[in-house]
Image 1 (cartoon, protein in one colour):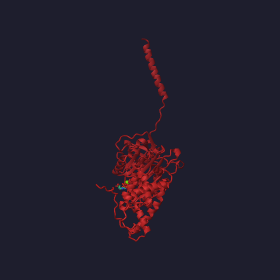
Image 2 (cartoon, protein in one colour):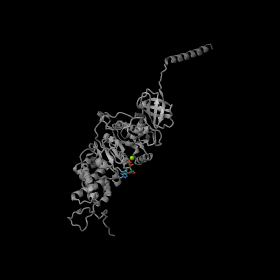
Image 3 (cartoon, rainbow, N blue to C red):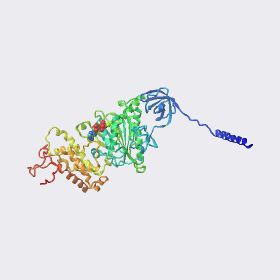
Image 4 (cartoon, rainbow, N blue to C red):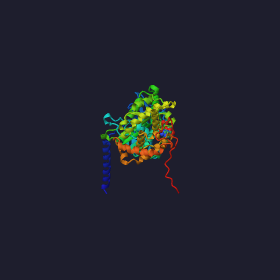
Length: 543
Ligand SMILES: Nc1ncnc2c1ncn2[C@@H]1O[C@H](COP(=O)(O)OP(=O)(O)O)[C@@H](O)[C@H]1O
Ligand SMILES: [Mg+2]
């Protein structure tokens, strides 16, 4: 009984001793929290004062969870590009520093998703699963970390794969007027990567929401979303969001590349990106230059596209192939932004509205298109025919104008023109129907063996399709040799042309029954074989 007050006393003593010990041990840390103030807000831009420690490119936090990037860091004021809804911001609102730069969620969890550049889901499928983040602006791979471009990136488009081949790690510009099929070429290329172990990032910048929805629906329907990430900044988003979107998308792609994967990224399109950047620069009071673009517009695109590369084997051997898209006005490819991009990239695919109107689809103007590095990556099986094909086609295009005047043509010229017309027919291709490599090579070999030259023009589409179908009959070992870098042997060539020849027999015009055996079938210029060859009827059975 007498011990109880004592033990209570002890307990108190111990407790107080513990508390005083803890308070002695605790030295309060001063956590500086810099807070500034908005002095001005305008279209997508805020001027902030009172943040002397903020650095260039730092992320600043505004009320309501809006973020902004410090763009102009002056002595007394910071020009901030806002990355979200700014209608609720007022002069005098508090602005906080975050001490970090803008970053984006990366990783496999993004595959199949449609997100904006801040990583917010736009497909209604809940939050994006990701554990890693990367800054959106990263230095491009050093020269010594890069390997040569030596593996082809098959687009599935005959005209591109044969004449303007693209290699993994290459940057190939797609340019042309509006509504000429630029997006279609890029989307078809993504569709063709199915089962080819290439991941894709489709980056839509400043497009109509309906156009993006159509592209996503197309990708989803063809099963391409399994290996694709779509990053979107819509046309009505803040210009700051449009500006950062390609950088964010590139970081997402780079993460895959650094894991040793082959990646394809499409920027659709950089004209809108340049416009968003011009808007920001003008609002920030930077001096306008040519076409009112700021002086560093070249640099913002080159530092973006320099990040596309093929890494050395020691670094995983991944690659990032970039297909930037540029929209020209009235076919003017010498305007400021198109020329910039042409000089930054390794070649361009030019789509022409006049070809589009003529129904030559995809409307690729072969004369104005070039691939500066892809030729080295092109498979030997293509290379065996591509050179002749290009030459024959170029000759044809030059002569075709003459032929339009109804000039009398000699036999040699007429042959070139007839051959060229067949080439053009064979290079046509509807959208969303990529052609496998073996089928492409079968068609090209048949073309260069002049097997199509006697097929009537109006039957070319069917004939070409038949050869494509017949290509499934190419022996597996021969088809496998198409995929290697080895030259096509004469035997293999014979096997393929043999298949094409048999396939094309029903499409050849039948010689007129009264024709003399030695009569030339094409003795008269423009003689169109009238007899429509039908499919061979089965041997008539007599009942
Ligand atoms: N190879 C093709 N075959 C048929 N239609 C095509 C082909 N390529 C494009 N188109 C059509 O042309 C239109 C414009 O194409 P799009 O890719 O959106 O042009 P752009 O991106 O240059 O504005 C679309 O309606 C598309 O369906
Ligand atoms: Mg487009």
